[in-house]
Length: 243
Image: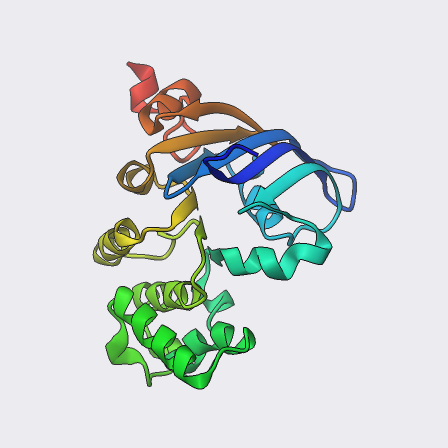
């Protein structure tokens, strides 16, 4: 593993349980504090790739994934999942407790932390996303943008070194999206951002990779990848590529 990489993926291959190939020899690195955008059309392997980083994919795979020096294998998953957190595309998949405060506390409590440490983490993480004022409210009473920020607070409360973001601007109106971008820009953690939203990619990422049929077919500067891939975020040729 590269001394500067906190995630290293080598020759990752994966087939779904029905035998359909989804990842075909993926090599990838994430550096300390780096944000990388993962671009590509629906079905190209992006979300499947993220799930592998957490050891959540069922089926046959080959290759190696190392997260913060720990190989992603069944016996190591608890350790890996303390290093890496994921913000899912639909916040309702992450919010399930009666109150925001209880939801954010759920992960730290399951680490066996003291009540005082849990309260501290809940307060700090809600503060990071500007949601201290909703601590006592039920998550289902919140707007889409508020839910996304509370779900992110739940991730931050686990003190991860890496955050995975799966289409984080989905369902958000422009003000909520702008607020989320500002919060994500303020976070020191390394990030992998799966998105069709090129505004989001340009604002947050210093580097991009492009997935096509389970392979990374372009990587480098965000604008360079958009140009090489000829992609506009919706599967059509991009204006950049047309020039």
